[in-house]
Length: 157
Image (cartoon, rainbow, N blue to C red; front, side):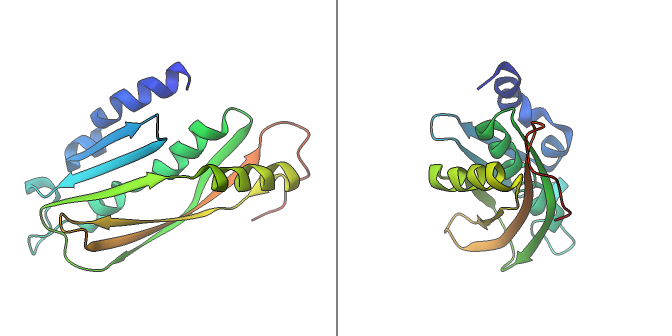
């Protein structure tokens, strides 16, 4: 992990959208995992007193991209392509989402990008409450491309 990544992992909780929404991020570099929590509070409560959907999505937005950038290294370009969120039950109290990319999945993504010049992985994460009930499911579509000039020609995804 380079210095830029270490700094990001330390100051991410000061990022204004996370700070304002009450989102807390904990990176575990050893396990290559991110755990994100969100307490229900005045600034992230909706009209009916449950978690605002935008805050639930915000707590999930960048983490698969960040983990892939960190783990693939400087030879790859990683971008979000699209995302969706499905609300399953009202979120109250503290909710949590855990982000992890296995070594096997990382190898598949890297191999595909090396072979074809790109990979379009899809990741799914559940936002759960204290009783481990699913509050929302977020699906993230990413784009991974080889950075060097030796990659096969690009085509639109």
